Image (cartoon, rainbow, N blue to C red):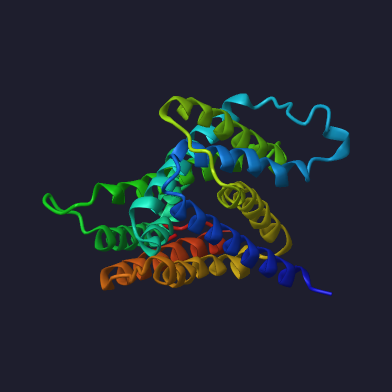
Length: 292
């Protein structure tokens, strides 16, 4: 029998694998309209969620008193989803994954404005290191800046606001209800893109596109279970395995070789997020001081 920490470790590993394979399929699906892929993410993402709804809630599972927060979560999540889908199609896989690690940086900044949290010098220094890493990866310049580098940054900002809202929602709402409203919203929103043309997929493509939803929905639930069974400090570092997956599959499938600046920038972004993460754990055990 596995211990709780071992179960948490296993769930996190499976979550990272699910997210990584979802990213691969999204990148592969560039022949299909973004709206169509979003439909598959929403519709088939409902399947893992419905498996978790308690029997006594089947008749009224959708009821909530926090409509405004659900709307904010769905809107920011939709923006983040569209941004990361575009980024995966237009940029090397390892580059997108590297920049996406910057989400804790934006969560730290947003927590000041939306949660009234105090951020000390250690975390501000971590934010600065993370931004330096992003600058190294994107190499902004008036003549050579690639506009598609903005999309993973938009994803980070959207995801950060999602994290802020979920902190509030999770006080009263079950995880499956939060996931249901998001998947249902993006599925319904995808229908607005019908006039711009959808492509009838072959059976093989239909199965792969369906996996975008199933893997995405399952990955979120596995992530939640991981945090439930294990200490966050033990399992969170496993998230960085996704960069190794991205480098391996990016080279194997698309012959993408990450540049030196991508690897250096990714190292700084990862270092920044680890510092922020470790400080948050430390602050739960000690009182606040200027250097937090």
